[in-house]
Image 1: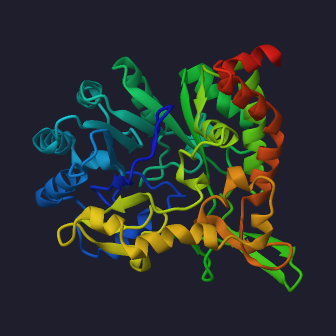
Image 2: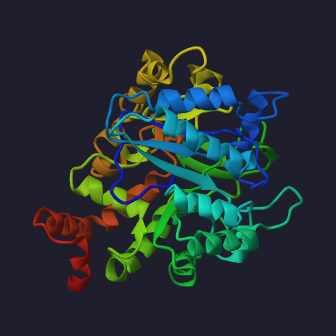
Length: 414
């Protein structure tokens, strides 16, 4: 989900997926495409009654603050512009006095045109554009259904959004094709595109026992190790970033950013880390102590616990039958959220970077600790490397903020 600097979490956030898993691309690492199997025979399009219920219930909160309407997919633009024009009219109808509504959409950008650009600008949409770096890096895995790379169309979408002055985040996944081209990737976004808001998202695809990862059969890359009790073997797809590689990727970019780009380029990974060093609540769910505040609404009104746990075990109910607030505050969702903290291995609980990592996302906790206890995060080496590396400059920036100064002043010191 794209974020603005200073975004804060409310009671809960909701990613609305009006097309479910339907998409016009066939990105090889997409974890959501196979969710269509939950709805066999469905056209995967949100109907008017579900849309109206979603908007009405989302705005039923008594808060007079800001409420987010977040659109995601699949590919949400497949619904067509008229659908979102209708949603804006529904917001006008149900919005309470004093309420502010913030719109955002995550998109692959390939269907955007000037009508979309004008609409996004008029209603102050924040757009998250998925792009994985230069043409070669992006096209490695982000293909359409005919196997053709999508880079040219996505770059055109970026240029269109800039022409209409739409607030845009770059959402870049880090994988086997770009993880070793660190500064080339960062400088492409910063210098070639002129991007000022960037998120880096690690690709970790665990290969199932039958060899499947997503919709593909792959041989996988085996991660081997030894705990005190037994050896273990875990397979991840060849596309996946290696356990320590994501940390190296972030570290190399951080070293350039902290010397040249603080206050000029906003990188969500670094903003989230700074919040931890300032003893503030994490602004992204990966680094919160507990989960459960970021829920999913499917095209038919079904609600699930999390984007990465859309499955029968994490189905909460349907908003046409029960209000979304009740589902979001259910005992089932509360247990799901608390499990993130309560199921941390002992090795994590005594780790010196737990305050920043919090065990990261539970979906990546599938390897044993050195003592043999299951539940360690696959990316643990990355986060130890990254958080240890940034400790001193983070403490300096936190000190600057405490004194009322801008964190960008650290560039003078370095």
